Image (cartoon, rainbow, N blue to C red; front, top):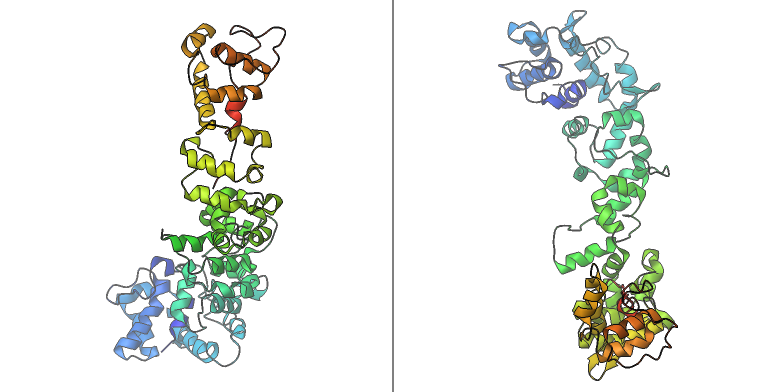
Length: 461
């Protein structure tokens, strides 16, 4: 009986995509003669204990199988059918001990093998065993490649069929073997036999992505669960942030759905997530030295060698967000203002830090400045008289904290505050020759100094 590999090879790319192979019904044959007639003969041999000659004669002469009569397999060579001749040649040569790369040169120039099917207008092996690229047969390269990346043997018809009809998936691949056969896999000839998955492409710089980057990426994500929200699982995923095996041009093309979140994330978010183990192990400095993408983040800010990330971590774990003043309470100001200026020197000047940490009695003044800043936004669209009528002597502007801040204002804003709060103590800043009024074109009616200074902290923890 003929090996199944012969059936796969002669029918590949004729009927595989249509589901013809292995699905022939002897009682209703044949919708795809090129694919199904050889299989029909084999079924008769297997189920009826026919000899090859008897089974071929039955298929090639019985009107019930008239669709097969015009195929190459039922054409006559001498006093026999081509199918029988092709079978004998295949069994004696393809499975012989000599190297299989010699087989194409034998089969592809022999009668019956060179006859064209009237339906496909192709020879039986034209798209498989006898396929050429340039002057070379590529079947042996094809077998070598799938043997490596799919662990499919030379005589594994089911495995070969899956590759030829494009039903393999990324999960079927042994990516560790991909670099060893990348050059062979990516020749146009072999690619024409292995339609999916698409692995042969170059990065914008011209590097072959199959020659290493793809397999390195698959090794990096091996065993990781991208669906679980378990904290330990999320910790395991965090190592992928800015990982060079994930964040490169090849993976941007190959797996954009993972490249984007792990390589385009805000560094402040990504680096704190990626450095979680280093934080616990107190090895952040080493982590920052080894991770260039994180070196300008708050995690890697070491003014004078001070480990500021510890202070930031405490603030974050306490529920404080320095970009959102509404989250800050007295305890937060105490933590920030008692830790000293260096850890905040990347976000504000020392004078701005001093303004941020102004305290009168038991009250921190920064919230007062924030409230005044919010109220000042309502000036928009109001005329000068309306502003004065609504806000003159308003405690939002007129309080001890704002009086404390007044020396830090420029002359214009200081005089504006004086108009709003005429009972406030005199300004230590010498007045200009022509003090501004609410109708003066020299003022924008915005307290633009301290109100917008004290909240310039931008750390994303």
